[in-house]
Structures are given as structure tokens and as C-alpha cells.
Length: 61
Image 1: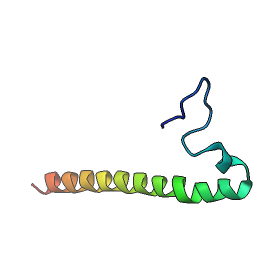
Image 2 (image 1 turned 180 degrees about the vertical axis):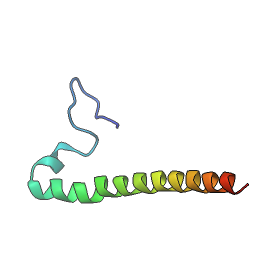
Image 3 (image 1 turned 90 degrees about the vertical axis):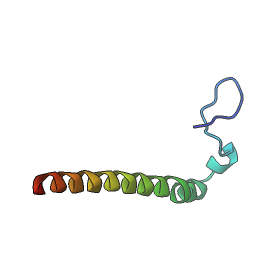
Image 4 (image 1 turned 135 degrees about the vertical axis):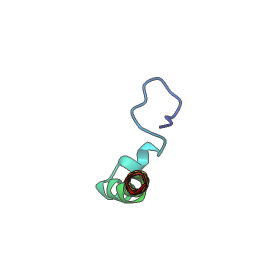
């Protein structure tokens, strides 16, 4: 994660103003974190499927 330049930074790149209200936090979660989780899950599922296919293929031979 990229951080803004400065001494001690606790906030990631989206500006601090985004974190002022609950509404913005909710919107950020919807826009940013959910898609990330979904794409990560898809990648893991693809890997799992490939492993299963390889195992099935090796059993058949």
C-alpha cells in the first residue's frame, strides 16, 4: 500500500477527508475492498480447479 509522504502516516493514499464520515467509509468499502476480495477468491478458485483437473487427469492415466 502506498502512503502519503510525511513523518508518521497512518492513512493509505485516499485523502484523510474521505474518512471523516461513516457514509464515505461505507462507500469506500463497497468500491475498494469488496472487489479486491472477490478477485482474490476467483484467483484461488481457478488455482484450486486447475489442481483438481491435474489430479483427475493423473488418476485416469
